[in-house]
Image (cartoon, rainbow, N blue to C red; front, top):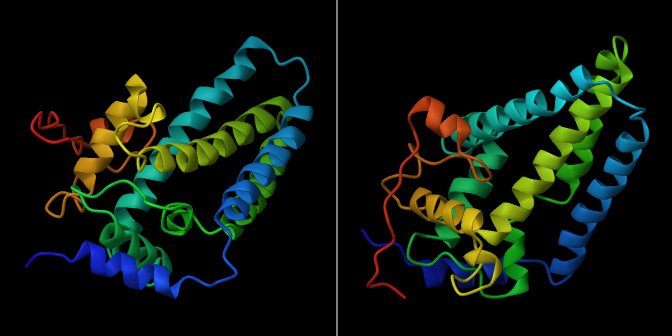
Length: 221
């Protein structure tokens, strides 16, 4: 049965509060994230070479977390992640399908970005992680948490770019273009539960054997 994407988009947009401001949504996430980064970076003091290993460790942890949450809770119903499942599979994957990936107006950002309060919750979760690690080493704690937060912000930015029109200058950048294609394939109905769960760097997709690539059809615009 075919999916009426245009009809769903019309219904979804009609349900958005008239008080919603797309630029305020995106601006708050970016501003709060940068402010939190400034606090963390200010705690880094002349790190030694071995302490920088917290950065690749943080990248791997975030990549694993992104993959696991997306695959387990974004595409399978669990009581713990019911809201995320509804917003992701129910809304996001109904709003965007393989043949209709770009957003059409700024208010469509509501179905692309995480809720604005989630950046606050994410940063709040970094606080106990920071203090536990700081019991052993402050630089490692700050570098590790900074990397996790950069991962979160990168996810938001990359995801938005992956829903840009194909002719947009950012969408033509080599790495973004490849990730945009992987994300487009993920939005195919027969692949969305099994393939391409990473949005920034497909490390866990590669390790778990869920990476799927097909070249773009040159006949399509």
